Image (tube, rainbow, N blue to C red; front, side, top):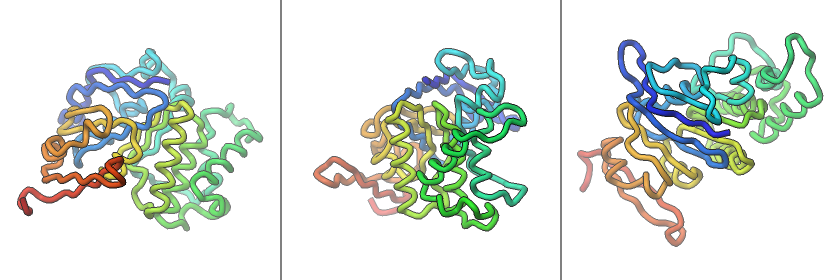
Length: 261
């Protein structure tokens, strides 16, 4: 399912947070949204999920405006992981993941075998099968994040939007989750994720969207986007790029503008 945004403008608190953002997110690609704090990454992902109204512009799913769908219809098409979560009740982890199946369930309908299989598979995928019976409020920050990612995966939507899913994850699980998201894209889903680590963005993402002050500074493949002049303009740091593994990968060394030349 193709997700497209045309000249989207969003105003929050009297301030223009997105200033005419346009992008085309295609099925089969893992797209990373990068940029400094306050660039508009979270607002863009929330707008793509239909959670933030546009001041102007258009967001569409396969050509249909996203605001034309009922909320549950959108949830069947778009899975969204927010940056921050507050869970008021100590649900078990498997119950929390089952919430991701809500868009596919009828009102007051019992859980189906398909629901239970989707939940179990999602927990296994994020290496959280052993957490199924534990209360969500008893988990570490990293364990909770993996359970919440599993909830998003359990919805089995054609579009996945994840806002900073790697916060609190250790290195191994961060790499595992990125590999899972790339595999989801390879299965034909449209996957969009905000990423802070430029090395990971270069290694795993097929396409990148670099936001700066609410606008798209540059977009395209990682080689085209992750160039010193764009990094320096957006992040206000000096960037040095070193090739590794025979030039197939890159390592980014970043310094403050006041640092060594």
